[in-house]
Each structure stands twice: as C-alpha cells, then as structure tokens.
Image (tube, rainbow, N blue to C red; front, side):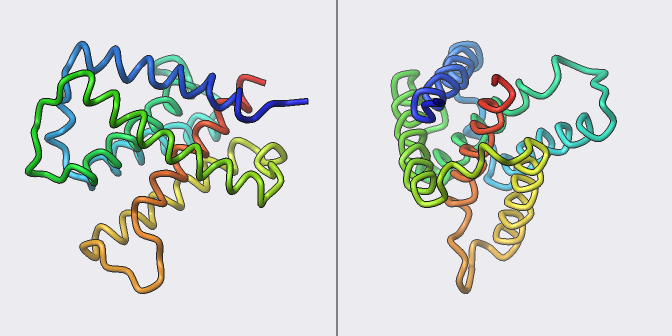
Length: 178
C-alpha cells in the first residue's frame, strides 16, 4: 500500500537538494524576479512537459522529471517573493533561503494532506497529463490575477495556485517514479 506522506517527503527531498545546490552556486539571484516572471518560468516548464507529452519526443535535456522539480522550486520561490516583497533583501544567506523554502514546502504539504484526506487520494487515479493540464489552468488563473493587480472577487489568490502547482508537480513525480 502506498504511503503518500513518505513518497511526498522523498520527492520534496529531491527538489530541496536541487534548490540548495543552485542556491550555493548562484545565491538568491532569483530575488530580482517579479511574481509574473516566476509565473512565466513555471508556465514555460509546464508547456514544455505538455509539448513532450504530445510529441512523444524530447530534443533538449532529460525529459520531464527535471521540469516538475523546477516547477516545485519556482513555485516556492514565488511564495517566498510574495512573503518578502520586492523591496526585501536581495541576497539571502543560504540558511535563511532554506528556512523559507522549508516553511513554504511545509505549508504546501499540510494543504496536500488536508485535500488528500477529503479527496481520498484521487490523484493516484489521474493521468500525469491531466495533472499537467490542471497546472496550466492554475497558471492561467494566476496570470489573470496578476494582470488584475491581485484583485479578486471570490478567488483564493495566487498563493493557493502556487501551492497547488507544488502539490500537483510532486504528485506527478511520484506517479512517474511508480
């Protein structure tokens, strides 16, 4: 019987390791990016995955797994940017960056556990391609909210969208691994 919490932790560890290594290499140079730029980076990754799914061919790179990892990490960066704002410190110490990463991953994990309880692990019955479509839909919603300067009438805002992208990306990594 699958253990979602353990599988989630395994995939988070993979994403976190890449984030930490890139932070060691580049620092927090991503702090210069505005939220719409991070949203567009996630969109590029999701769109590439869909293109590979539809064509059955990858001419650049290692396929889709690194793209799902990147979407997790870009979404965490977006949540950090949203928290710190554009005027905050640009170069964060590694320990601070990792603490913020863990904080936002923990929040996304708690959201996953709550939703997983209510939906009964329905994601396990979904196709990876359907989850990619849901990620693309979330991105369209986030772009609309960004284009309206964050004003919504009834929507949860961009934060929930980013957390859903993290969770769907992790689900996809689990499904690919299994």
